[in-house]
Length: 128
Image 1 (cartoon, helix red, strand yellow):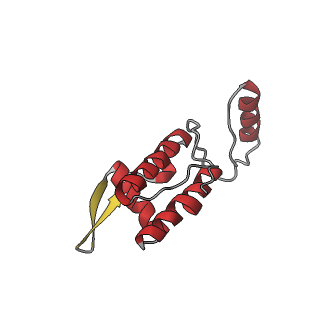
Image 2 (cartoon, helix red, strand yellow; image 1 turned 90 degrees about the vertical axis):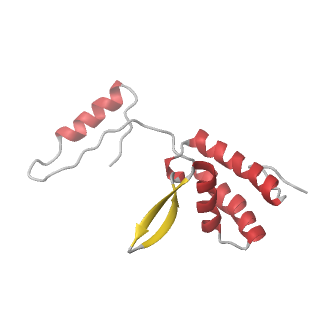
Image 3 (cartoon, rainbow, N blue to C red; image 1 turned 180 degrees about the vertical axis):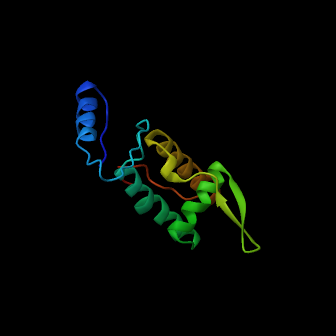
């Protein structure tokens, strides 16, 4: 179960839920600050538009382009697996809130134009 606590009634509701827990079982309760994660619409646009266009332009998969652009924007780190060195982005896109994800997508559009001469339409933009 997930509950957002944003006022006294919502805090009271969570308290009532906790008080009803069966104490014959063990429970894990996690409390953390709420953050606005990327929206479903942002995620859909990112994969269906940006990553598909870049995959078509470069011959790489959408996932390869996604990972590459995370590394370009936020840096990479090397790690070892059984004696082989691999590279991964320092940041995952799931860590980005709605504003950060929007800024990253804007950065991707600028990168695509500068590096590939490729125009990626903005969300809800129609290019004729």
